[in-house]
Image (cartoon, rainbow, N blue to C red; front, side):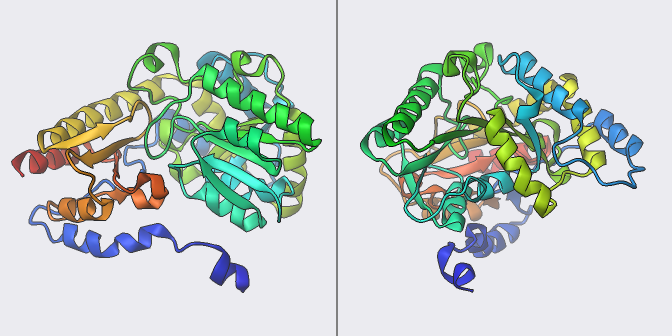
Length: 382
């Protein structure tokens, strides 16, 4: 009972309810830009794979089918510049959020351990540390924190970042990996670096469009050694599979084996039909390109509308969101949320993502082309 009542923050989106009511009262209805939930159809090739695997009377394998793990390995080599992954170092998960929330606990962290995460961040990194009894530490300098303190056991990276669309280059990723390994040698305790890379296929600015968003598993980052490294990925965004809860973690084979055992005991298993659908989705780049183009159009429309209305879009180099603030003196994000709700537009305040984000709002690209155009028209008119 103490955990439920005292250890965790309130669920932040509940506080948006009164603003949603204001937005819904707009004569032309609400345009909900607050949550990044896909609205486009699940690709037919994926639905066909799910249906073909629907006769599934037996229990699925927790580790994932060999075909699924091989498809992840091939995808990393083809799309992320990471050749030669060991299929044994791949594990499907029930979406990526549960892995983020439970990784500190699965790694055995607890009191006296620190979990580093970005200062502007998806709140589940913080929640996961608290669930394990560890201390969440927001920072924009993980390498420096690793050099200064001896209690760090897990470092969360998020590139492209949610909510701000920031991207870590190879040199930045390598600096964190090297600092984590130096801390492990100094303290004699392992330090895991886990990189949440769920938006990697949605790059908008150079050099990331041409070069691709680098992974923490990239050989230029790792030096060919995956020890202590995990990459987390979800098919929710690139393939419109949020309803399938289709994701995976990959990297250090020994770490993945350690994650696998408690998941077997707990029955945390991705259903067989979903595993079959994931296998097909990871092998088909065409539907990913189509979805990326949809988001590119909506991003251009929404960005133009916000900039015409006197807002500034910061960072937002990749990912599913625009990171927006009013031009001029810093304004509290909740005031901006209220201003936009009056136009029938619902956005998420930066306060959801840490103290460093208090002046921005997050704008999701997950609306139809028509609703994106309506939002832009309201902004331009205002």
